[in-house]
Length: 451
Image 1 (spheres, helix red, strand yellow):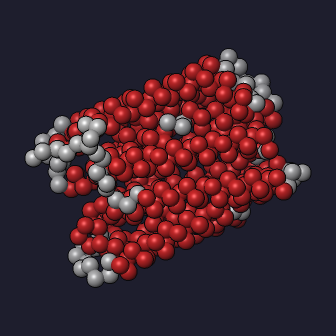
Image 2 (cartoon, one colour; image 1 turned 90 degrees about the vertical axis):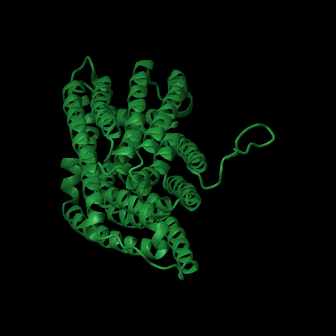
Image 3 (cartoon, helix red, strand yellow; image 1 turned 120 degrees about the vertical axis):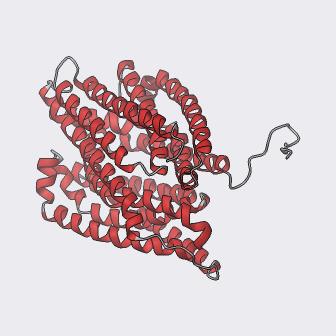
């Protein structure tokens, strides 16, 4: 069989191939990262680092809700859709979606009742800042819309249709950033609590577009394929086998990660910072410097999103050769993208000063760079492990890594000689341990003759 090349001697990328979908999603992610980066520059100037820090604390509760209600659902729907769509079409996928939504709504109702009844205690005790209380009202509504959006997005990715998911995400973020900036500019004299509320409000309202766009698009596609014969229906046990470990992984990872972010300002106070400076420092790291270094992660995110359904299909057919080949290519691509992160790190202090009017030193930038690169390789390994139904091992490795992070942050960030550096060292060390455990297990797994 001959391979076809274009006039320039380059093999064309086939539409619908993994490479094509990865490039398409990577372009989308880059656009999203650029939009988000520009938004953070504007936000830092019209809201200030302290409000960004308050919003970061508020978003920890959002992350916990998202991890519990949506994380496992998305992995399960993407994985199972990749297996059933070719045989059962959108009718089979819609049955899967209904099952996922039913479980999602039950979990969301339970968590929302707890949050709304204990809102003030959660803000003051768990998040450590009563100014987050006002924005917590919106978390259940935002998660409700995000859940419906993600269930359709996961289905589209599992079916191999990336365009609609990518387009929806871009338009949603444009709407979100526009709303947040507009709300803040219309309320320049609002207190910090209200500004944090307005930021979450803009995020919540923007979800209405994605839910409508993806939902209507899916049901229109279903009508076009209505005559397709239904041949397979995944049961509740198939769904829960994937969703539950994934949900626990997301939940425990986010709980421990959120705990680390919440205790970070508290430990800085112990190290000698004022409360205002501590919250502002969190805003600088999580809302300015870290997002800048995470810009190349757009390519890794696209790669992992496209790989998951592909690895799931190979796993179903016991195709170890294809899995090994894809792992080697993914590792090489990740290494190349890591070099781009290093390049950004070299200019990070100057860029942070120019764009955000905040000073950071090179030591902090380098430490964060190491953390980001480790996270890139973790994301790739976890994508392969998810596709090979190793959710329970992912859960165990995540707990170990996050627990080490939390302990080191508590110890090091409270020491005057480490302070903010202790936070990043703790994060990077825990992530490195998780990467070592995951990569060793993955290496042993792909050497097996059969799964």
